[in-house]
Image (cartoon, rainbow, N blue to C red; front, side, top):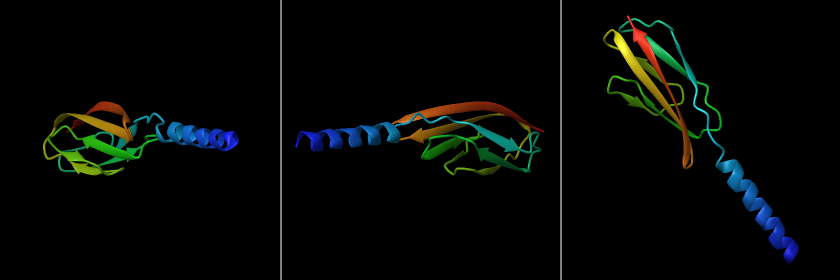
Length: 99
C-alpha cells in the first residue's frame, strides 16, 4: 500500500512539473521592414506554451500561433506576444517600423 501511494505521488509530481513548465515567448516577422498595406507574417518561436495572445500595437489582437497582420498606416508599432502554459506565462515585446 505504501508503495502504491509513493508511485501515485511520484506520477502526480511529474505531471505537475511538466504541465507548469515556464513558457518562453519568442517570435520573428517577415518582411523585416514592412510597408503599409502589406501582410506581415509573424512566426512564433515560443517554447513550452499551449496558447498565445498577440497585441499588434494598432488596437488589434490575435490568438493564433502564427498570425498574419496588415498595418494600414506607416509608423512605429509595439508588438507584444504572451505565451501561456496554464497559470504561467512569458512575454516578448518589440517595436517594428512600418514604412
